[in-house]
Amino acid sequence: MHQPRRIAEEEIISQCKTGSLKYQELLYKQFYSYAMGIGLRYCLTRDDALEVVNDAFIKVFNSISNFNSDRPFKAWLRTIIVNTSIDRRRKDLKLQLNVDIDTTNPPIHASALDDLHAQDIIKMMSVLPPIQLTIFNLYEIDGYSHDEIAILLAIPVSSSRVYLSRAKEKLRSAIRTEALKHGRSVR
Image (cartoon, rainbow, N blue to C red):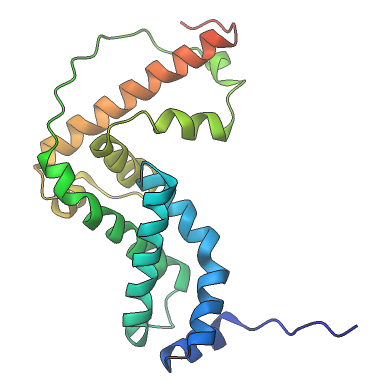
């Protein structure tokens, strides 16, 4: 039985630079799951993430001739997806005023985390307001500094710190609630 040959990433990118629609489709299919994984971290719904991913790929195809093949493609794509997510929501984030006053809760005992799975944590993150979710992702997952976040989102550095703090507290509270559902003790 004849197996189709696997096309190397470099060849796909090279052909995309020539404007080949066939290779653009191959690139899209090859990196779709990776892109959606990033998009879902920044968007509140799957539909929003899909829009961000599609917009990001349009940007990729429009600027692929500028791609430096000395850099890893995934890193370049990730940057475009993150920036597209932020661009899409920047207007909403500026308008959103979040003045939650959370009560202080005791720390979570490590055993409370034993029963949590990745899907549980992702579900908990979905309860965060958009500004907090975005800043949490940028700072904790993607490694941006508060200064960089402030520039990306056009907010004061202090606001970035406050929103991150609030996001962490909401996540702690969600973890506490989830642990109690499973009959785990929290301290």
